[in-house]
Length: 287
Length: 345
Image (cartoon, rainbow over all chains, first blue to last red; front, side, top):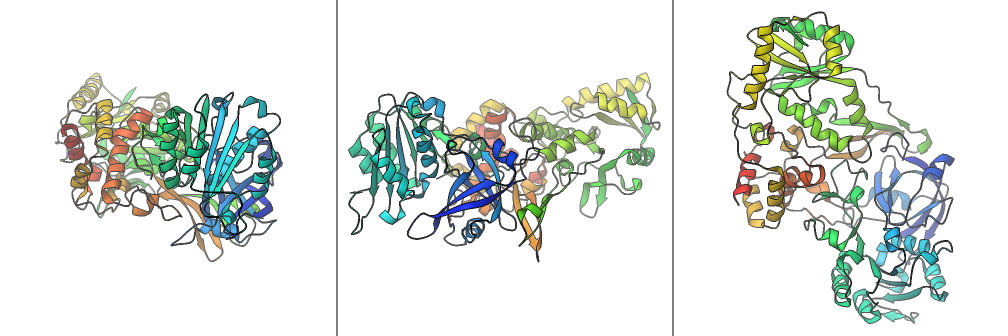
């Protein structure tokens, strides 16, 4: 955001668009900053988000999908939103081409607690389209400067169909490395799918990561989280060692407009990352 | 420093302030009194109890333009709206409303990122508090005594005014108030009698009776946390609620806002506007998901936010007992009664 006014977006240009899924409604947008100093000041960590801003349409809070270890740009994976009414911002963004210019306010919110994760084994569990900030975290941890700071890394990622898996090239790349265990599953395979089939909670039970010195970072649709959490309890994970990221409708992104208020927290500025222990202190006012 | 002027000379005082900056003061309108920017000193009317809309709009206007843009043109051509803030005088604010500014300060400029609009207006504005008239009873909806706010508390004002017969006693409370009062040549020096009257009024204001119940911020906050899942309680409290949001618009401590783009032909403005947690689309996400589809959930949000969440986050109840929400509720929902019921529950 602008240095003296957090409500004024910085101009960015779309430098690359990747069509992620076979339904063509999820794309990754790579942005470069039009003002050099904005880019230099944009210091973020995995798990943070930003407001994507298109004048005449509005703003949308979207998790940052790139890793801070990738300098020079910032990426967001955006679904064309809206089932009843179209999401104005995401539709406009999806209709733009490379070279298009929009606004960006951020980085916003708290990141995954990377210092807390250091020296621990990490189990990353993602479902569907909610894999974006997890991808940021995985790429951050896998970077050569960071890999030794973390213990074993296990990724369990599921989508409804093979065509709906995000970041397919990266998933393949992780599968070839020996310093990360990657478990990919789909609810229902197709004729070309040779991998695992099954829902994320069941796969977690099967993989059964050890809770010893391990943190689970879980992001997905509410129904996936609802059934995955008990699996991790049974495996012996403490509530402090289960992390997730909340969603609420947001506007300002800086804890002022009151919209994402849940109990005594604002999801934007106090979250969006919460441990299960923290979530249990809040009223059930978000699902 | 205490000075005084005849109330029927208030017009001259207003004119003197208007020479120094923008004057915002109570004005009589068809439906009642409201704080308005004064264009003619004769408009100022201190013969009021309290205004319909709270004075928060002096710092947090109902609409605030952020950026002007043109559709079809590059974002680089959009221009932020200059915050052209001049010295201002907010005149005749009742003590409970002055208290609301402190509560809002914590949120807008005291915690996290600073809201530049709120902060700059606060910095540029001298607040003239004005004691309630202790010769008249409090209005039925008022309950500021419950929240520890006196009817003549000078704290939070730069200059505090007390009515004495046909005079207006004016005391400087802050250095800014002192400097202003010294520079104003209209008020005359007050006597020792006036000093005593001022102090007596402040003291009497502390015991001035409004509706009152026992509220301990921490205990009440916990009580509402425990009541959160008591759907019967919240359905009973909200059964008449129309979700109209009037309570939040007249409230001095409601700060929820929307940021929206309004385009007419190709020219548009991004602005913030007051919003309300009482509206059904307040939490409606683009996916269609909405965690607060029911009226009771939204009334619960409003009351719990003020009496529980805000206490746990900022240490203070976000209500000053001005009674506006009850007075202007079309179906007579009374937040004081909800708090009383909750404490008893």
